[in-house]
Image (tube, rainbow, N blue to C red):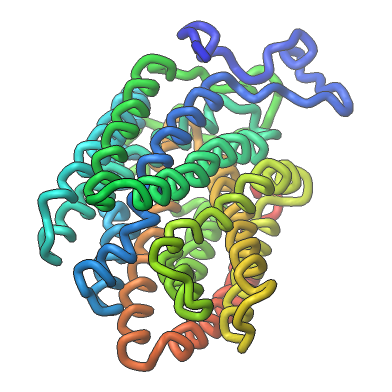
Length: 429
C-alpha cells in the first residue's frame, strides 16, 4: 500500500459534518492512513524482533548454559534498558516535530544489532548488544505512538491503537513461526535466524522511510474534541517532567509502575510452560504464537471497548487476566486446557493494556509534548519491569519457579488493589 505524503497528513476525520463538530450517531471515523503505515512498519519489524525473542531464552539457557538469574539479568536489560532513553527519544521528537526522524533512528539501530548476535557468545557482550537493541526501541516507541495519537480522532484513539497493535501482533505471530521453520531446516539454526531477522528489519526501516509522513497535523482539532490545555507548550525537558504535575497523567504513570513491578517477563512464562508440559526444544519457538494469536484477535475489540467504557478500567482488567494466568501456572494441571488457557489469558492481558495505556495517556498530554508525555509513562513501566525481571530470576534461582511465581502473583494482586486507590480522574481516561 502506498501512502502519499498529502493523504497521510490528513486527519482521520475530515468530513464536513465533522468539521462543524457534528458526530453522526453510529458513524465510525476511518483509521488514519498514518496509523496503517506505522502498523505495516511494526508488522514487519515485529517479524524480525520476535524471531529473535522466540529463540533467545532457549539459546541463552540451553545453548550457552546461563542460569535463571543470569537470564533474568539479560532479560531485564532486554526489556528495561530502553527506560533510560525513552525520555530522550520523546524529547528529541517533540523538538521541531521530528517524530519520524527519531523513529527511523530507533528502528535502524535495532536492525543493526541483529547480526551482532552472531559474533558474541559471552554474557557481557550479549548484554551490550541487547542494550543497544533496546536503546533503539526506547528511541522509537514514544515518537511512533505520538504519531498514532496525533493522527487519530481523540474519541477513537483506543481503536486506532488497537488497529496498530493488531498489525504489530500479526508480525509477532509470524516471527516465531518463521524462526521455527528456520530452526527445523537450517544446519546452523540460530545463526540463520539472526541473519534473516536482520534482513527483515531492514525492510521495515525502508517502509518507514518511504510511506510514513515526516509531519502529521493533529486530528480532531476542528471537531470540538476536548484536548488538554497547554497545546502551545514549548518542548523542553523541564516541561516534560512538569507533565507529572497533571493529576491524570501522574495517576496513570504510578499505576503502570505498580503493575509493572509484578509483570513477569514473557520469556519466563514460556520457560515455565515448557517445563510443566515437557515441550521439546524444537517446539519452544511456537509457544509465543498462542499469546500473539489472542492479542491479534482481541486488540481492536478491546480498544473500541476501552473508548466506550473507560480506558483505565480495561487496562486494570487486563492485569486481572494476567493474574488468572499465574494462577493456572501454579495449579497441578499438566496438559489438556492448561497451555491454551494460559496463552489466551496472556494475550488478553496485552490486548487490554498495551495500546490502551497509550490511548489513555495521550488524552492527558498536550500535542506539543505528546512524545515526552507518553515516554514518561513508558519509562516508568519499563523500569518497573526491569526490576521485576531481575527479582524474578533471582527468586527462581534461590527458591524455584513455583515459589517465585507465587510471590509474583501476590505482588500483582496487591498492585491491582493499589491501582484502584490511585485511580485517575474518570474524565481523562
